Image (cartoon, rainbow, N blue to C red; front, side, top):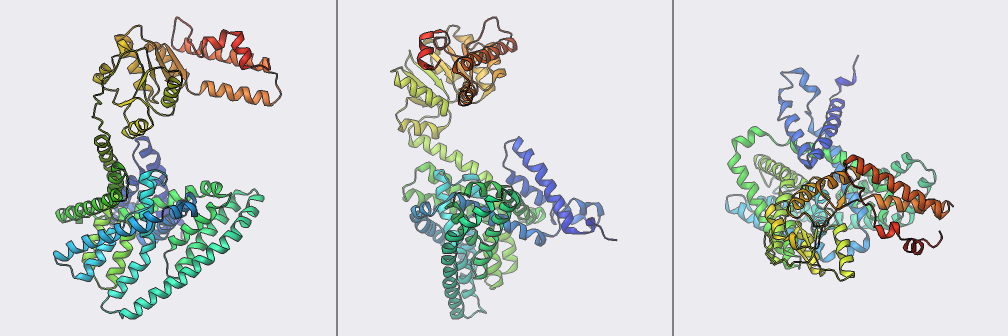
Length: 602
């Protein structure tokens, strides 16, 4: 009698789900992207890793994945869901506003990168047609990895999205071009077939746009009326699958249909619910795709050909980074944005593997050559998160030079200022209030992007890392009016309070606390006032809901004061303080005139 354990697909599913259950929380704990974890699982448990030993050790078949082809459909579904989610974040208006980047920079980036890479390969011995095919394949960048890291709303994310959209659309003409160059294909018939595909595909896309605008709002309205999450999810997945099948049936890429489905649903009022309900499926299916990437990496082949592989990876990355960054800079992007986007887009793509397969089938390149560049592509995909980090650091250095900001800003710091450390939403609001009352202040921030933007907005701010004692020394805190710590780094804020209090015993130190426990630690360290960030907002929200529910203002105010006193006593007890800490301005707490003005209903 057969059991589920006799089914390799069942065992592979268990291994994948188990890997997801371990990788995602473990890598999140150490603030490392799970992308690397999934690829490493593919390397370790794939047919080139422990899977190669499953014939000798029978028990290994229960913890390894041996059939990459069996799980590839799930990987492809992950990419489809990714493009669908990108469509949900877009709109036709936003897409139209990006047309210059999509068809200008995107087309130029793909063409120039392909020609340069192809020309270099031609010089080292590849036939012209094979060099062109390899150039086009390696010029593509990874939608599946780049967009989850960059997003679609930041300047880097918008630039990456525009170029990746063009590449996704260009896949079909590229594959037909390779077919036309094949020695065994009739060039004329291949071009005719491509034109037919594009015409029929265009008609299908137009039909989808018309039918989608008419039918999707009604379909989702009916699903929403049932109040059944299962039905809503089923309808969402059905729309994605049908749209992908419709474009795939005409010869276009299924991801084009997924993107269109996302764009159409984004125009309805149900896009938020659809995005939330499909998110878990996208993440898991994308993890399966990354595992298949790792399964293509054979450590033994890499060790035998490490010099050639490293040279190939570095060469492709350098060409694409320089071309992409240069074109974005020429198009008017900021130097930091162009640098970061160029490095982020520098590795090959999952679609590179598709084009390599098409070039091999067309006999433009030899199977051994294709296998070599498949490993190069897998390595490039693996190092994409590292490239993202490297690109961000490079962009930071470029912006430092561009804004004439030294690594430890050498601006002379005047005395008699309030020093604000940290310039996020809290620090910016404090600075706004200081400016409104003509108070001198100086903000310090370690994020160069924040510093550059704040300077352009007219704020008095310098770049610096206050975790270093020499930076604190430069702030001349002995001559400052007050010190305000607004950064969301609990341990560092306690350390700074201790240091500064030891140096300047009389300086008022006001600190943003994460919670009451953190506030107690700050008071112990010497803070003059520690304000739990959620306290006043929670009390104001409680006051508003009680008043809306019909409770009289007087009892509400009394209970708010009582709760604040209770929290104050808790902080005093937790911190073993000899004094009662402040939680609100004494003027507001004690002045009946101000209280009456603020609460006229009382």
